[in-house]
Amino acid sequence: MNKVILILVDGMRADSLAACGEPYVGELLEKSAYSLNARTVMPSVTLPCHMSLFHSVEPMRHGILTNDYVPQVRPINGLVEVMDKYDKKCAFFYNWEQLRDLSRPGNLDRSDFISGQNHGWEKTNAELTDNAIKYINESNPDFVFLYLGWVDEQGHATGWMGEDYLRAVKESFLSVKKVVESVSDEYAVVVTADHGGHSRSHGTDADTDMVIPVIFRGSEIEHKELENVSIIDIAPTVCSIVGVKPDGDWEGKKLEI
Image (cartoon, one colour):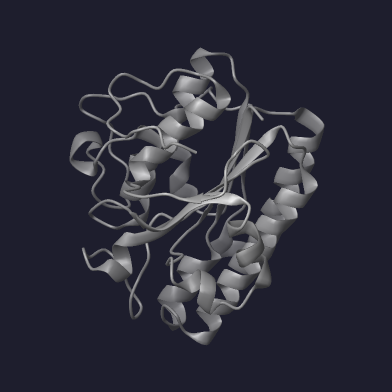
């Protein structure tokens, strides 16, 4: 196990895992190191949270405070740039276009964007999952990021923790299951979210918006509950699994999994 697939379900509250009623959630947790009480960063907004995940610093350090990307004043290498330094093959699969700026041009072996806004979030979640599985099994990359945007869009449309939102969470976990069951034991699978939400919004420091799940599943990963987990701890832990050194500017810690 020295490769990683990072699956991020946008807007997935930690308490939605039990509430969605999908049996695979329990099966996955029983074989994983996980926290259902991890914390994201403020502002709890999609692009700042993703930048913090990939660059292992708080938003005030990387400077992205809204969903509009601006160049970093003091640039930090992100997870993909670190992987590229060690000649690791990386790929992105996503349906929200702003995530193109999570890595610098030229560092990805494959970038697969299908607009959820133009082609439907549920449909593109499924298409990207299938595309990622096919690519992984054909190309054997070292790191793959699979972003599933439907849950967040459903939260904004009909409300967090409502019936339609929970159906989107359930279907997203079936995508997770499909990935786990379709790839080799070389891969650890990380499942997380960027933020939660309340009513039809997010972005506050309330627990509804800040608490996220973080799950590490792999053949060499112990079953345990993790404590004091932050979204900025994910990148250093991914580096540990792959066997590369994290960037010296990163502030997150490697989790003991």
